[in-house]
Image (cartoon, rainbow, N blue to C red; front, side, top):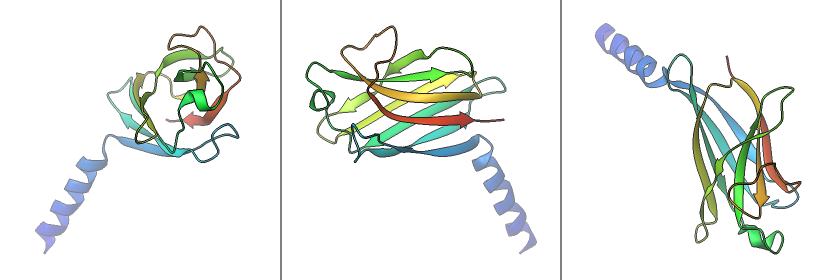
Length: 135
């Protein structure tokens, strides 16, 4: 019995050693049905992996004519937003996903609807955002 308990504790510690936190992600007024989560996983001492998953995400062109992509931005406190990447969008499933490594530990994550996949700055069409704070 004691060996089983020690084994279970060791397995749970190993399984959770890289997990940091999860954050809820709720769609804005532009896509009110959208919802999902942000998973944070420790890569190493300096980097974390931020995985964004959004469900019930309508195609960008349904928000406004000419929009083609959803872009993820990170804004460190006191700094301008920096484009990370476009969400991998599945129109059939209406889902968006991105996995982004970063050294940032405190930032605002925003997802915006854009006319291309490499804009220089975010549009005002914020579909979801969340404050991230990891130790």
